[in-house]
Image (tube, rainbow, N blue to C red; front, side, top):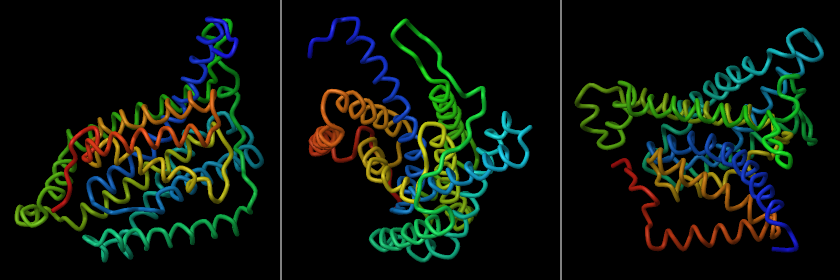
Length: 307
């Protein structure tokens, strides 16, 4: 293929596969939050990418403080930045649900327009606060370098960290939704709001915390994103279409479907983009997904929707 030897092709597929794994992690971390908001609540949150951007900027600010103000904290700031990114986006998501989203339930087109406008407002705030140029965090020493798997394959340590964060957060979301009392309340509200209210569940509080949790997960995705790329005011909007594609293709309320869909789409785009252009890789991936959805419109796994 293209004059490559078998060993070179193997190395290329391994490197592109790991590159696709990093992209998969970004897709999955964003899609986890969106699957909770869209799949469990039926809200089309077009500002979800901006919550990723906010988490990234919070990480940048913590990095700036650690490198320029308190340099002795440089090796330890990243775990703190992840927590602050989650807390900051969680609080903002809570307020957005409280003062905007709660008036728009069962009106999906209105939630789309309202959150799209919110996203534009957030982008302008980012541009006015941080400037139009992209910002990069100062990486701690333990995230620099790579792990040499073979003579021809080097795996960056920051990519391994992103994979680790994704695994931990996916397991946490699974236990929260399917092995906790709060998860039972969320699923009860999803399946039948009136019966959930009759059973004594405060569905308004469930809605607020569910939306805030989805936004908080997007913030963690932003923190992880800073280790593999720089951040600009429109960074999140570059991933929002792919994220919705992941959620719809996997099944709106299926955690397993979200994981499988994110992996398939990310790996397809990564490997195809090496042999073709990036735009052609996206076109082929999109056409394949649309073709599958024509025969299986509910996605890879059956989804549940709020009634």
